[in-house]
Structure formats: C-alpha cells, structure tokens
Image 1 (cartoon, rainbow, N blue to C red):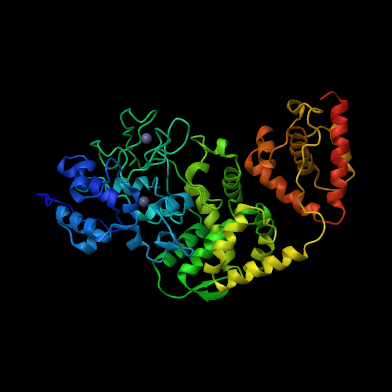
Image 2: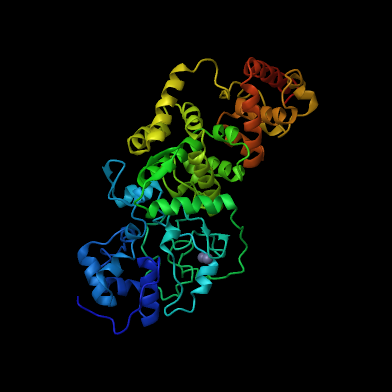
Length: 492
Ligand SMILES: [Zn+2]
Ligand SMILES: [Zn+2]
C-alpha cells in the first residue's frame, strides 16, 4: 500500500514508535490500528511489541512513506537506535540469538508497559496530536525525570494497571502484549488505554498528564546512578567497572550480575552496605521475587513482570533503590571483594547460579575475578551457614494463630541467655516458630505474622551478623527447641 498521509508530524527527541503513531493517529482522526496497517506493522490481529526495538527495512520504508519521514527518522523511533550499547536490546544477547519472547521473559526491557513522568506528559500535552512518551521510560535504569526532578510513575492512578499496557486478565496474568494497547480506540495520547475486567469493556481513559500527582524526589545518589547507566547505554568509550577499564556493554552486564548477586543472596549485601539508602525498597522487591508463582500472579504483585530470577522491578522507587546500590558496589574500591563474598553464598543448585554462569563470560575483568574468587570461597567454606534454614519440625504441635509477632516474656526467656540483640531475636524467633509449625519460606512466615518487609530485613541483617559469631547459631537452635516446647505446653 502506498498511502501517504495528507499531513503528518515530526518525531520529538527521544520519542518511540508507538507514542509517535498515537500522536499521528489522534491528529488525523483515525484509529492507531488503521494507521499501523497502512505502515505495514501489525501481523494479523496482533500488533507486535518487537517494533519497539527495531524495524526491518521494508517496514521502516513503508512507515517513512506513509508518515512523510526520512528512513533515519523512522529508525530513530526504536530503542535499538536510542540505546545502542544496552546489551539486552541486541539480537544476540549473552551469546545467543534472543527472540522478543526471550526479551520479555528476561524483563530488562519493559516491552509490556512504560513508566512515565506526568509532568512531561503535561508539558507536551498541547503538541499536535498530544504528548510525547519517552523511549527511555521503557528501560529499567530510567527511574527519575531529570527535567522535573521526580521519580517516575508506572501505574495508572485510576485503574492501577501499569501504564501503556494491555493489562492483565482477571487471574493476574498478562494479556498478549500490543505495541499500542486498545489499538482500535480513539483516545488522546495522555489517556490510559488499559481495559479493565475481561478486556471487552471500554478503556479506562484516565488522563495521565496530571502534574499534581504525588511523588518522591530522587536522592543525589539516585541521580548519579541513572546518569552513569544511561551514559553507558549510549557510549562507545571505555568504562570503569570494579576498578578496571572495560566496554560499556560489559559494564552493563556487570549491572545485571550485581543485581543477581544482591537479589539471590539477600540480605547478604545489606550487611556490608548497611548504610546504603532505601534498603527497605530493595527488600520489598526481593520479597516479591521470592513469592510462590501463584502468589506472584496477583494484580498487585509485580512478580509477574518477567520470569527471570533477576529481573529488575517495574516500580520506579524500588528500581531506583536497587540500581543505586548496584552502581555503588561497582564503583566501590572494595566492590570486587564484596561481590566475591556475596556470590560465594549463592547455592549452586539455584536458578540464579545457572544465570550467573551464563552472564560470566560477558562481564568485565573485575566481575570475572569476583566470580572466580567466589568459587574458591565456596569450596573453602566450612561450618554451618550463618542463617540456617528452619525445617518444619513441629507441624501439628503448635497452633500458628497463637504465635504473636513478638514473643512474650513467658516464651522468650531461653533467648535471654544468648546475649544477642533482644528485640530482634524475639521477632526472628516468632518467624521461625511459624516455619516450624507451617513450613514455607522465611518471607511467607513474616507475612503471616504481619511483619513488614522493612522490619523483616532489619531483623535478618541484625540476627545474621550476630549468628556469625562462634557458637551463636548452635545456641540459638537449642533455644528455639526449648521455646517450641514451652509454646506447645502452653496449649498453643
Ligand atoms: Zn518529567
Ligand atoms: Zn487506567
């Protein structure tokens, strides 16, 4: 088809294809799907999201003709052109050809939704066709808006669905993604396009360009982290990582490996970087990652964002906290030794370990050295683990509903003999009692007791450090057995 629009629009700097098509369609008064058909983009009834990343020559040429653009302008509307050094966008990633399904499962490119800055949408709302959606909002290292000095948003305030998404079914799983959600609907580009319920209802249509929405300002460390990550994704120059020069691509693979190290061994990193900011937000993300798949599918959990064990959070605040910690470690003079120690705790049976082995050949010399050291430490490790798992030894002997989230004096006196942090020990012991009678993970037990992720993290960091002292772990295990006996005898 050789339709050429009677009038079109110039792309805005940093704009991405779906946002551009929305503006053009709104301006000339047709549906985005009709415009996309003219451009040769949809395949059958679907409107594939891989056009976010790159366009083949025929599609780019047809889009250029229809929209009266140059070929370079059309390619400029893709993430592959906008962040050329960001490895998760490459057709070959970590040594393998990746499909767009691999990319979605990995979660290091937001193909199913977009973060956004309401102030930026408001500033550009009066442009012909409506406001500009920035391509960088689709990349997990973009969590704040430098222009408006605010963290980004990622959910519609009205329907709570992630913005620019096709949303999820009532069972919480994603609907098939669409480059433009609700592509037959004529809506302003600032309106939420998510269809609640079964997907047959009208789109939510809430205006997202409300600059009065509440938000946080980023800290200086967050601003620095985003600058450094974004610069690497655009750079061809040499980059420093863990004290050694490397390529920007390898630095960005180090970012993923460090994320894996933090999340798979949490709270080991928090013990070393105890003064890092917003560790509670990192803890909340890790807790989501560790939820059972059925729990993660709920609409309010963001565990369904992606399948990989190390995907970054969709939530910009959690993302800011995590990426800031990652950059802090990669810039720290002792970062390599910290990573070696942390990674030595990653059990070789875990999915995270297999992911690390796949990442390792593509990381910087500093990260390779840390991974090598961690293997030696793992071989040399002796003695019981500092944070021992709690097996379900007392099922049926205790009523979990009778366990308070902070143990009373009548139960807790065996802890007084341990010379440990008293309040944190009482909280930790309550969590372990629940695990002894109900099984399950530490995080699930804490949730059962109504302990917040922040309080759990604080207890875990403190108790873990205390347990490392010689003899403490053994003495604590004995005390827990006595407490379980006291609780059972009390008729619990
Ligand atoms: Zn902004
Ligand atoms: Zn909405």
